[in-house]
Length: 73
Image 1 (spheres, rainbow, N blue to C red):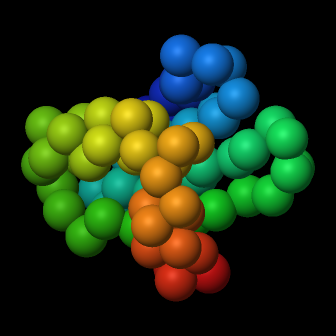
Image 2 (cartoon, rainbow, N blue to C red):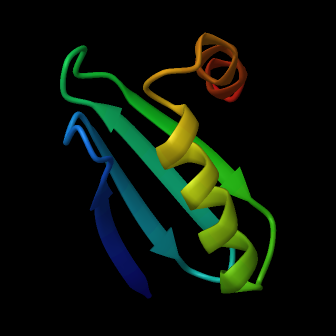
Image 3 (tube, one colour):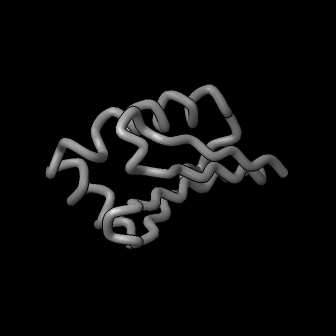
């Protein structure tokens, strides 16, 4: 089992990655205190890393991405 914590450049989003074969992405906004979970059904960590990069870049500034993430709740 592997866990990683990342933040975006504004330090407003914390992303927890827990890899147990199926990768789970937990995105938490410090501003609102909510926790989002995105599950990637893949055993290829490099794909998860690419997806994480996308989340970090778009989560804060892109309302469309925010709505897309909300669909996973």
